[in-house]
Image (cartoon, rainbow, N blue to C red):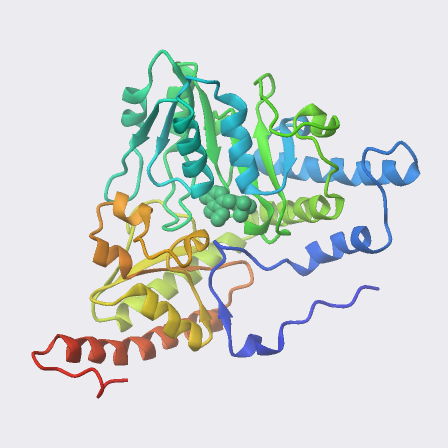
Length: 403
Ligand code: PLP
């Protein structure tokens, strides 16, 4: 019998609302993984009984991932995460000189990989987004040329949660016979993903964004699409990604995918959407001057990105952190960077407004109490911060009397 997963001793005083950075492992995911970390030992490539058992576990997980995306198991390549899946999609399909079409709001896993390809001589069309944070399919159509090798547009933006018109883009890609990659890392488990309906050739997901373990991911590669591997070694993953499979991680990822699929049908996702809407409404009522970035756009159910007029997001983030509320000021990967978010600036937000924005992202484990706690912390933090701002901006005002 496995020990039950206990909440951390501080969990009553601290609330985690940064699920787009990473999600906690579900207890059932941990339980599925534990035997593979403890006593079940086997390399999935070994021919003996232990190896065959590991292989069977990997293949069962592969089928769970395939079910989540509506494809076959053979079309799934396990990777070390979303970043590797994105890199494999881009470097694996674009040859020297090939033209790429991508958007200005991609995650750095795509953005920086495309920049590298650009340095290597691949021309790139960087698509803008409108003020709601959406790419225009017509812009995609106009960008295509005879040498276009790949379109890469994300399904859900990690900072705003705004969903992109991937089905329309997929139709254009098919009409023009161009490969289409979708970074669906922030969509998986939050909205349904059907690679056939999208009409994409490649699609990336990541285990730890859907209550699976960190360091797991997968790339969907449509049957028949050629891919140049990035790693060389054994014939793992049907010769497409060399390296011994992470059996425990893959088993956990598979269980998380099954749970994610269930959440799309059992009301789990709708519950998170209600919590997010309550959170958004509660904060907007409490804050004097605030708004939602990407408001009115189709969004994943767990994310809200809010701007707070006249305040520095970094200070607000720190104050909330001290009060036990973990949120994010952009993508976690950019923490420490002073630059305003490339996503919000691409949406046309002035640097001050972009710099005043915070992302709140909920998970399956979020509760109504968490939402109430968050609203209270934001309200109690904003009050003194605003008086501080007002004192600073008054002629001769001193900041010493505030907070
Ligand atoms: N793509 C998007 C949209 C993401 O949000 C992230 C992580 O935040 C990644 C890719 C990278 O995924 P991973 O952390 O699994 O490498």
